[in-house]
Length: 121
Image (cartoon, helix red, strand yellow):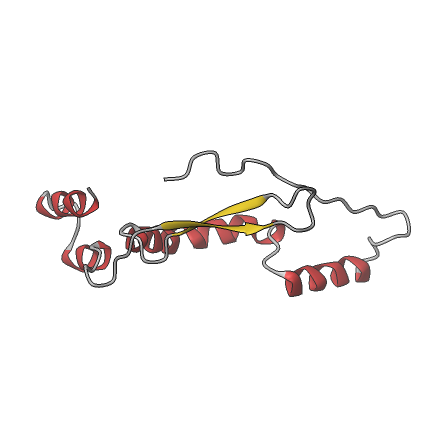
């Protein structure tokens, strides 16, 4: 289990006290993860999109820690290829047009990815 693994790392001197306290889940804050579904009304048959709520999961502190370590590297190498939200998309399209790349012949496409998450915990 997660707490045992964190304790082993601390006891083996693989984890300092600061990170131990940061990674150890707080009993009063932890909740079971749960799945819920959002409908896709724009699709035929109104399929459902599964969403896993892990905000209070026992692994959340570890996830936050890893995100803090990895995020700067990801952002450094993928900043030009990542659209954050609708506002960012509009700004990128405006810049694309300003740079003279947006033409009457420009074509846009969308992707619908099925089974992005093939395994849910």
